[in-house]
Length: 394
Image 1 (cartoon, rainbow, N blue to C red):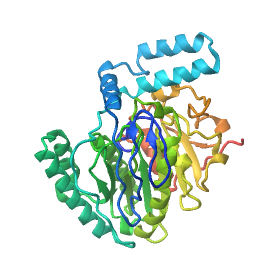
Image 2: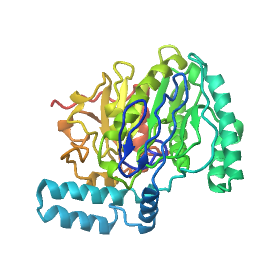
Image 3: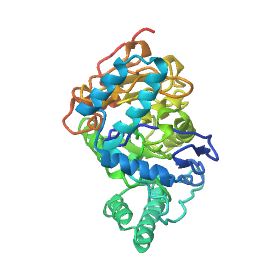
């Protein structure tokens, strides 16, 4: 699943572990050592995808048969109509998971050399972090080039944005992690954190970044003191793996995101209003994150489910919104959960209890595209100008 920022991120998947040392994902490979993306210490060591997972991802990319195609819809129809009960629907979900991620799958780069992530003292300011991480990014690009990984090197150089990029965190090892700021965080009183879905790595980062830029431009037009933070602060799950239908990786990521949000408030402008925009599998991460009262609005879009039964089950005091474009194939994913597999109820269903927002005709990767109804709606939620929508009673 993907798009240019949460809408620029990719796919939907999941895996697991705890904060601290992550567990081993059954298909996606080793999850890597966890760490805080903004708290003192390092970002954490990104995990690596196994060879088999890489091969599966590449094969899926070659297949070119996503679930939103005519063939995919026929397949859904045959399975759903043949009446095999809950188990059949769960197996169907696995088939869908493998198909729907085709447009955004990308092989991981587990063996690309890169320097250790920069470590920061508690209370390090944003400019200090920006400078150290930009230097680390440049060094990672140099090391990748020298190792003959010219594709990764070119993508890393593009991330530098001519030396103007601002990263609160960066780690070029493995699939990679990056937390980038758009806008003046120190003066912003409207701060948005974007979360991507599965298969978002340094190799696919350009899509995620494009969405963040689009959102920031839209927000700045209505409110100059806005900033967007693109949070690739966890090891996203591989799209073609057994983890795509579980909440495990989201739970691990939530242990990273919570402390990040706490630290972010200290770096943003005084009294900044904080929003979480959670695309695809990123919505599962948000739903697992204990935000307390730190977040004003949590938005779930293009969501395959959250692993939770309703808004009442989420550990947040934020207003929770949900929307899905009429062109988003994620609507075809069965909303079931059985034996720990599946992500459960549809967040846009009234019974879930989220506030609805208009997403227009957006496809799964279109929510943050300039000029779309979905982008306008998301901006209005962030800026606090969205039409008052009462949450459905559940």
